[in-house]
Amino acid sequence: MPPTSPGRTDLLIHLFAFLLQAGLLVLTGVASTGTTPPWAFTVYLILAALSVIRAHEAAARFETRLILIPAVVGSAIVGFCLIIDMPAMFWGFMVPRQLPVWVRLIWMQTALLALHPGFAAWFAARVHRAAEAIRSWGCLSPLTWATALAAGLALWLIHSQNVSSDGYDWLRYSLVPRQWALYLREPLGTLIFRLAVLAGQKWFHWDPYISISLLTIVCGILTVMLLSRVIAWFVEPAFAAPSLLLIAASCGFTQVFAGNIEIYALLQLGLAAYLFCAMKYVRGEWSAWAPGLAFGLLFCTHLSAGWWAPAFLLLPALRYKTSGGSPARDFAAMAAASAAPVIALALFLLEYRYGGNPSEMIAHFFSDQVMNVGTDAAMFHNIVEYLSPEYWLMQLNVYFYLVAPAFLLIPFLLAAFRSWRALQPRHVWLALMAAFYLAYSVVWRADRPYPSDWDLFSGLAVPLVLTLCSVASRLKVKTDALRLAFAQMAGFSLTYVFLQLLRNHLKATDWPLFM
Image 1 (cartoon, rainbow, N blue to C red):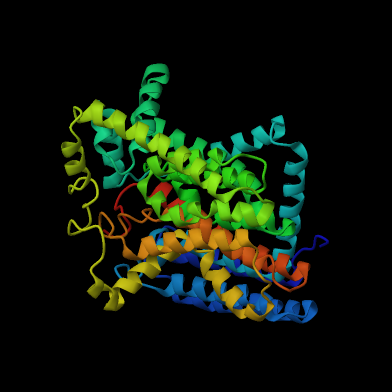
Image 2: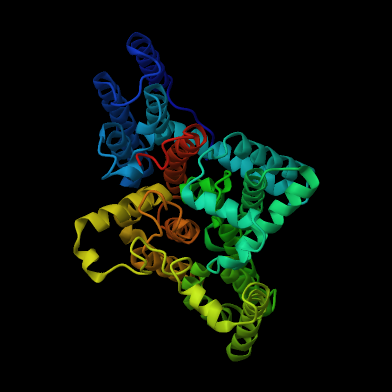
C-alpha cells in the first residue's frame, strides 16, 4: 500500500481544534483535573464524526464496511472514557480521568486521529517500512540491539513509580534471606528475583526496586524478540508487525515490563520461550524435549501456567497433523522433560526451606499465604457470584484494562463473521490456550480486591490478542483494507496503553487508582 497522509483539510481541523482547546484551557486552568470541560465534548463529537465519515468513504473505496468498525467502536470508547465519572464501577476505564485535563484532551485528539483512515494508512506504511528494515538487519545486527536498547531506555524513562501491596511483598521476599522459598505459587520466579537483587547489590549497589525494575525491562526486550518469530507462524506475513503492535498495546503485556514490581514479566518471557519452542517442535525442527522443558520451567515460574496444560498435552497431536512423527513417543518425552524441572525444584525447596518435611511444605502450600489467599481465603469464586451483575462488570473492567485491543478486534471479527477462513490446527491450538486462561480469569478469586490485583491475569494478553489477530489476518477481505483496519486498531490502542504507562509513571500516590 503506498504511503499516504491525512487530507490537509482534516489536519487543519485537528490543528484548529487543538489550538482552540489550548486557549480555553489557559483561561480555565491548564493544570485542572476532574470532570472533562463541557466544551470538550463538542470538539470530540466533531472530530469523531470526521473520523467516522472518512472511514465511510474509505469503506466505499475498499468495498468493505469493516473499516467503519474500528472508527465507530474506538470513537465510542473515547467518549465513554471522557464522560464516565464512576470510578468504583468503571475503574478499568478511568485512566484518562486520573491525569490532568490537558493530557486527557491531547489523548482524545490523538486517539481520534489514529482512527482516521488517512492517518491509519500513513501509519501502516511506516510500520511496514520499519518492520522490513528490522527484518533485513537480522537478530544479531548491532542496529537491532541498538533498537532494543533504545526501547529499554524508553521503558526506563516511563517505568512505573507505583508499588502496590503485592509489589512490597516481592521486594520483601527477594530481599530477606530464605523468604523467597515461602512463595510456592511462583517458586522459580521468586528465586530469579532473589538472584537479581543479590547481583544488583553486590555488583552495582542497587536497591531491590532498581534491580527488579531493570529485570522486567530486560524480560520485555527478550519477549518481543521471541514473539516476533512466533507471530509470523500464526499470523499472515503482511500482518505480523501490526499484530505485534496490538499485543504491545495491551497493558497486560507492556505495563508488566515497565518496572512493574511483579512476577508477570517473567511469566510473559517464559510464555514467549514456550511458544517459540512449541513452534520449532511442531515444524519438525526440534525434538519433544524442548517444549517440554520450556513448559516445565514456565510452570515453575508461575503455577497459573497449568491452565495451559491441556494445549501442552495436545502438542504431539499438532506435530503429527503438521509434520508427522510419533505422538506416543513424543508425549512421553515431553512429559518427562516438563516434569524434570518441577521435581528438581520441589525437592530443592523441600530440603532448603522445610527441612525435608513434606507435610509442612504441603500445609504451607494450601495455607492462606499461598493458594488460599483470595479476598475470603478461597481460591475460587462462589457459584452464586456469577449471578451478580457486579461480578461481570468487574470482569469487564479487568479485561479492558489488560487487553483494550480485544475490544476493537472482537466487534471487528463479529462483523466479518461471513468472511472467516477455515482455521489451521495451530490456530485452534492457540485459541485453546486463550480459552483455558480466560476460564482461569473467570473462576479464580483475586488475592486482593480490584484494581489492586489488576495484573493477575496478564498472561491472557498474548494468547488472546494473538488468536484474534490470527483470525483477522485470514479474513476474505482485500489485503489493503485489512492492513488499514489493523493500523486503525493498533494506533488507537497504542495511544491508550501510553496513557496507562504515563499514569503509572506519574501517579506515585493514591494507588491503586481510586482506592
